[in-house]
Length: 306
Image (cartoon, rainbow, N blue to C red; front, top):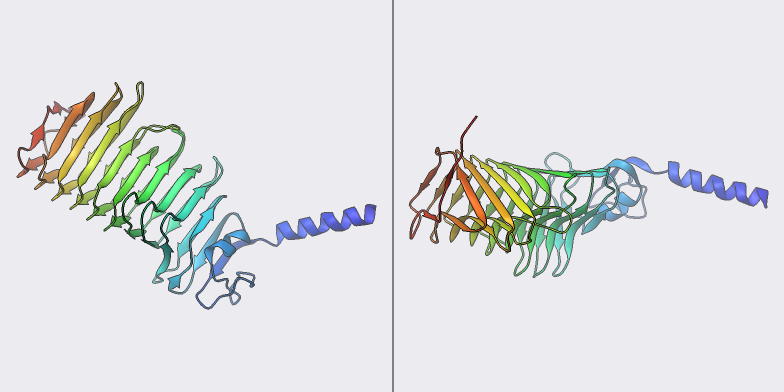
């Protein structure tokens, strides 16, 4: 019995230490391989299964690698010059992130093409920190969101150089997040939605953010009593949407939008809308012009710069 217990213990230990700190996938790979250089795997799912928590999975050839889930700290990235893609089926999710509350997740240089409705390109519901860098999400019909983040207020997501286009909706955030140089283009619903949630309310800073040719360019909405949604737009471009920037508070929920050095033009159902228990604070150095029927519906509040 002691011998058997020792053998089992050694097998478990060997299995743990056999994990890769860095795994590789390629279109010529095979999921029966060890995911090491020269023995690449075929899918992100297999590579993640043999990678240590906090490790990396790297796509080294261009092609599709399938939908996947991340349940531990990990970096999933495309090597420079590689087009690493995931086709997302109807009712599916490109990558579902459910890592631990102290774990770091990084997605870099990945491309998601969505088909059908009710899909998510990237959906994150549990993580410590989340970085989405240089990703693209294209397509999707009714109910599809390119990026959806809902996490406790203590956690933070940083999204940089990421584009959501030609689908139903762009970025949906009920968490703390920063967007830098991101774009939402030609979506049939909203470009950026910041909302209240069950775990946390959206608190978002969007710098150099572009939202063009969507149904609604930017929407901050709070619909629960005692909740508060907060959005700051710095050097944003919101143009050629049906509605430009909307701040909406319902059921005594509070929505606050701050706008600084931004351009809001050529929207066909008001450039800025302030509705219910909401406010929009303008620094006075924005260009809000050429919107119809008027540039502002409701009242802007002066934002004092310090």
